[in-house]
Image (cartoon, rainbow, N blue to C red; front, side):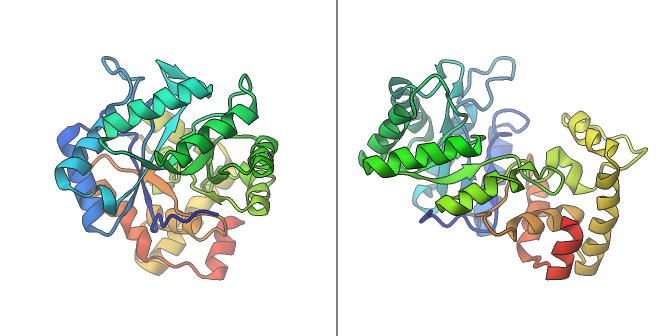
Amino acid sequence: MTNLDHGPLVLGGNAFGWTTDRDESFAVLDAFLAAGGRSIDTADVYSAWVDGNAGGESEAILGEWTASRGVRDRVVVATKVFQHPERQGLSPANVRAALDDSLRRLQTDHVDVYYAHRDDPDVPQEDVAAVFDELVRAGKVREIGVSTFEPARVRSLVAIADEAGLARPTTSQDRYNLVSREVEAELLPTLADLGLVEVPYPSLASGFLTGKYRPGVAVDSQRAGAAASYLEVPRNVALLDVLDDVAAAHGTTVAAVSLAWLRQQPLVAAPLASARTPEQLAQLLASVDVELTADELARLSA
């Protein structure tokens, strides 16, 4: 089980260096810390998909911010290995090199959670378990995470680590929100059995769970296509009505209710969500004060 306290919300850093420049990123991070936030998630690949970027931009902005503010010891920093264009896969040599690259960009001597961003079937899990344990023992990593692993692969990796007396994963990061619930069938029971916690993404379903996407409404956003696709499923449209009711009862937003539902799921350490501006962040932070009743949770889940 994890020893880390992520607080009620993990701030996603995927926008830093992509849709949010350095100064706006600093403003979001300052506002997050001022509001009591403490856990920030990034990855070495963020945001290599942008023309002119090489990957590592998000880590570099986060590292510059923690150093300039002197707050590294006040925040939980998570990053990931596998998908950086020059550091692909989970071979031991690559994982070691990728972490050193990340630590340099993050301007720190350790990360609090180091995730395998994807499973790597080409590398024996014995080797994966060994290199992550090596990094924990070296003090470069506090805890190990896995992301988008199949349940059987999580189980086998944990078994290998336990049998060899190695550091085991504590955290899993997977697609999970009110409209994407496939993990409830097998993955979440597996995590419960093994003692791992879940840090779900994208908590607001690419913006659909903010409530701004409605039948017949056009939204100007880079994620509009992904969010609007949820409207093609009738139960998702019906869900918006329930979200509206619950939000009205609490005097809050649909986004806040969606995040509160996720935060109150048994295995969730904290939902992961990103913000491009301090104004967007304030909408996410509104969820912190929302406590849904058992009846509201049941209505939303149904």
